Length: 335
Image 1 (cartoon, one colour):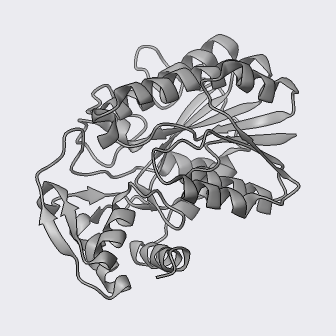
Image 2: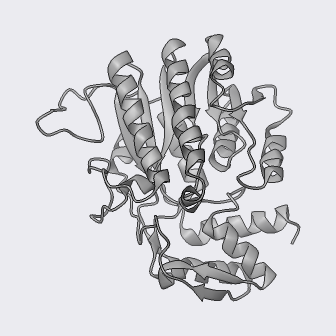
């Protein structure tokens, strides 16, 4: 039996596939290799995974339903980890159709394939963005999240609702993971740490939104991966204590669960920049700007449910994670 990882050429998908193969788990990886960001970086990740007999890569798009059905059709997939999605809050202001296509149409194809092939567990990526206009912190999966402030967030909230309907109707065990600002080696070029590093090394200014008054629960990628791998073995069961009189958003009478995966230690944006400057040995030229539409000033994860369930919570300090990222960046780009 194999584990399917969609978005395997992406940042988190690549690391998850590596971790599963290190544990001897056969992996089938899917990616469409779109050009939202540098395809060469995606290809480099795949080359790192290539040559392993336990890893199989298929280039296809989740919206190609017949192709997805064929992947699931042989009955070899025990667990599906759906990490493929159109990412990015700001890009959703420019190209909303991409989010509907990838995050909604693609996800329903995964749900249907899991339903008809008797997959034992579907794990899928949600996002801290679903908390939207919520300001009570730390963010808990037991809070209502009905006020997204970007289409990206709305698409991720929609994934949670779609997964719940399949858990309820067809008994498909689903686990949604709300990731909090993931960073680390092999990261996405559209993320702040990557953009800042590139600009500082080039002597160019960095854009600092909300005039630096931002806090993020930056979460190192290895911690994200450790949580995902542990959760593959935790198949959600119905919550017998769930009540429609006081419905708990984080669980259900269906086999459905949600977890935050965050460092539960928000970091000031200006401190992140300071740590990065120290690692690079250069000062940043800062271009202070107002808050961008769809953004939020702070994120902070309550990970008590995750810790209770798998005995693990992210803990990598920002100083350690940024130093590892900078070391990888210099090696990869030969700087």
